[in-house]
Image 1: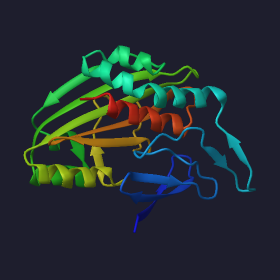
Image 2: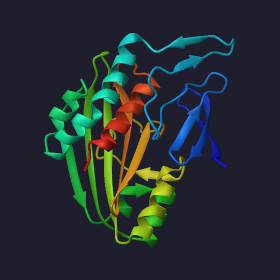
Image 3: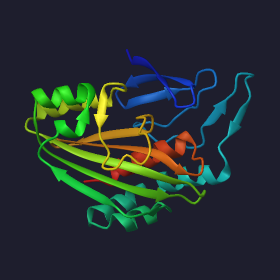
Length: 223
């Protein structure tokens, strides 16, 4: 039976998340936007209005998501060779200057229940990246990525479940340029590490689907 929970978007709209084996999937309700989540990209999802009509993503936004979906496999291979800038270019996106920090003390870089967990269950290390990416629709987004490595695999699973739950706290970005809401988020495990990413708009007005696809791409391109 899938787990259900509600999430409120920054503009006040609410979406129903049904969490299945493939990860959380958003279901449009009322004026909500049908978002792509960790189970796959949103493609050309539509906005459902209160009168029952729909308005599709713009052609440029649809192209951004389509480019990410189509070229992600090739971009991942490029990223594994250590060339993340070229990897983003293969997604038809431009990556700006990257900031990177490494630490062995995770709790101090987090807050909320996430911090409480790491105080009781210390990590082995934490890597954080932050950089802007621009798409061909004229939007610029800031991406915050983290890689938390735990000491035991059981701790990795527990920490990811907590981190994935909205409202339980978060990992702080290197520079708080904009508020990170956690609404455009993805994560995956790699051995004893949890790699997670969030995306937020800086300039332009990227659709939620574009922000979500960007966060998913950032997770996929981080090793």
